[in-house]
Length: 510
Image (cartoon, rainbow, N blue to C red; front, side, top):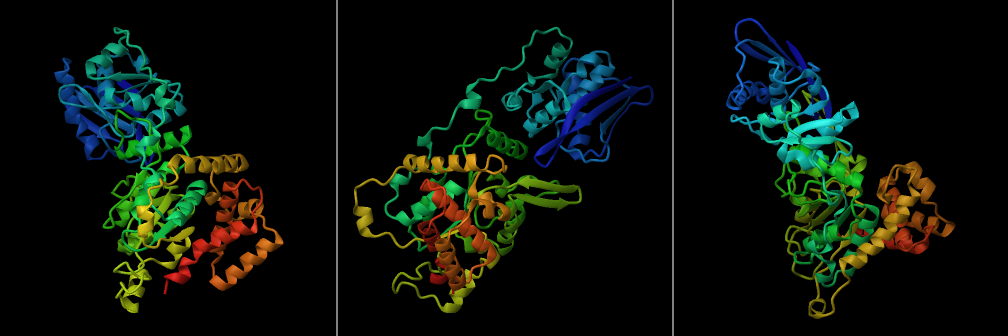
């Protein structure tokens, strides 16, 4: 007898439909799985066999053949345990074939017949909905994640017996009902660190406000103790709130990576990733025989903070050049070519020299050769992809002694949100959300300059020896500053303010 069930397999952060075909025929007892299964899928034979027995059902002493179609794509993971078991029970006339056709099924089996959670349920269930399936059977621990796909009836189960009862229509199990709070609740503002606790560094705070408003990359450079890390950790507190679509996309990435917490299924705050400088290039971009999302994808729609930038491996930094430009990273492996989203804001921090005190009196004793070697660890093409470079001098005693509290993150965020609303309305037909995402044609359309502004920018371009990419970044930054000021056009003062964030090339880079 033949039974065919609906399941799915992961490819990057997306899923594709898989038909699980189970056939039981007379012959010598055997249990074969075909369709390019990996080791975890092949081992499901023993898990399924033992789970069916321990759940109180007899296992057929016949020839069992399982095909995972399409047969020319690699299948991995333990999510096929449950559909394979359901197919066997269907061939034994324990489960009705007609009922199985209506469901998407995925889950890992324990030897006692209980069902364990699996990674990537959200993209799997979303794909099933696109395929036209409106019911799904998933592990109990994956219920909230699956319920994020609206208009999908989710039936969570804890063991094989519950699935048999559900499909035989003996139980009156209702679909899992998700709380409306899951879609509307926002993370409290007080969970973030506040800018009000940072003394001094007003210029750096302004630069971070511009970066947040336009989605721009930023590099902070200054001596140890000047507050670079302190400011970076507070940067998420002024970013615009995630939209529901962004939350779903981000949740898919964390679901595939296995980093979702069951108590907080829908990710509703922008991620802040801060990898150590010993991280490898593959861990940063995504690696493995079948690649999983790396740090730059886990920072999607959020912040990637690289502290002590020159200490990172040169190869790790260079692989970020394409993601910083395109908002995605493409990884080629024998099993296929995968593309992960990586649209993040890069916040980097570095010292000006190996000892860290270049430009602060007589404290620096580094030689010119040591300074050049240290600064050359960061390539020109990578620096060219950083929009703002802000100098952070040592904090003065008067700043620390001042008891007046600084501007709160909520006040800064209010200005950022106003600028973001202007951009959202302006680019509603362009498919982008921030000024940093403008391409060359869009820059010419939305960043028009007057004669005075063109003259100032021309002088700066020639004097500072800027590249074409730097020229376009200055225009995008000026557009953001104008949005923060509520101006429809870019004025001279906006260009002038932006140019000061390129002066670091002259002050430090030898």
